[in-house]
Amino acid sequence: MKRFLQNRIAESKLTLPLTMTYAAVVWLLSGLFTGQWWIQFACFVLAAFLMMEMNAIHALIRIYSRMVSCVFVVLLCVACFLFPSLQGAITQVCFIAALTLLFNSYQDKTSAGWTYYGFLAIGIITLTFVHMLFFVPILWLVMTFQLQSFSWRTWAASLVGIVTPYWFWSCWLAWNADFTPLAEHLAPLGDFCLPLDFSQYTSHHFVTLAFVVLMAIVGTIHYIRKHHDDKIRVRLLYGAFMWMSLTSTLFILLQPQHYDALIRILIINTAPLLGHFLALTRTRQTNVAFFVITAAAILITGYNLWM
Image (cartoon, rainbow, N blue to C red):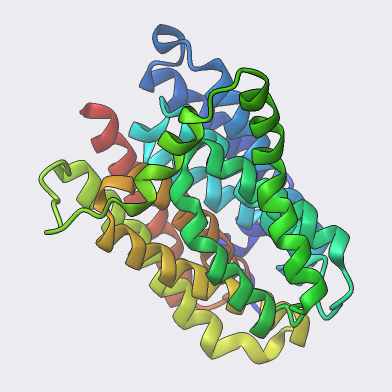
């Protein structure tokens, strides 16, 4: 089968280092030194590494390719206005870790350990982004239908994992005899932005969201058409990515005030879908699409940097 330039790039060992170099330039132009975003940048690098590990451990692409982590890096650079957010940086690292750990529980309803550590990462996210708790029922559904690991044992482990960070925090609050911070932390769970208010969005928010959602749609349609080429386990993992992408998009539309954290979750779940499309398609049309998507990502990144 003919290999186009798209396929040579997707399978090259130089692609990820060059992509990370590109990302470093974007961070510098965004204000890495002036903003002193060193922790955020470290989280970005760690997140890219974790995406690479998730791809390798769970064989998300059946050939040698780093396109999952490359797509993740490029999509985050598209949303470069998110770089200053420490909350978002923690969210993305812990969420990738949570997915990687939970995927290890595939078809094992006794895997309390992997489930506990996966939901411990979710619990850590909720310390900075408490609305992440709304994703917990979605993750239970993913465990039930995609990972096929949901049982009373793993359900209990998930609850213990979520509660663990709060247990340590409660011990500290009990020592100080003041539980007000915990109540104030959980109070926003009852706040809903009704009617929906998108006035805080700029054109940069809309353009970035539209591009990421479009990439999720492209990746989803491709995978639905070509899923028979992968093993059943990989199909179910990609099913989890598709459901999480859909859920993230709906949450962004229903809770626009949490855009910064939610679009990161959308990007994490979109990266494997689009990476699969870019790495495993081999037609003239997809070769053109590869360069159109790349050019669009660079142009939107430039537009967001210009803000």
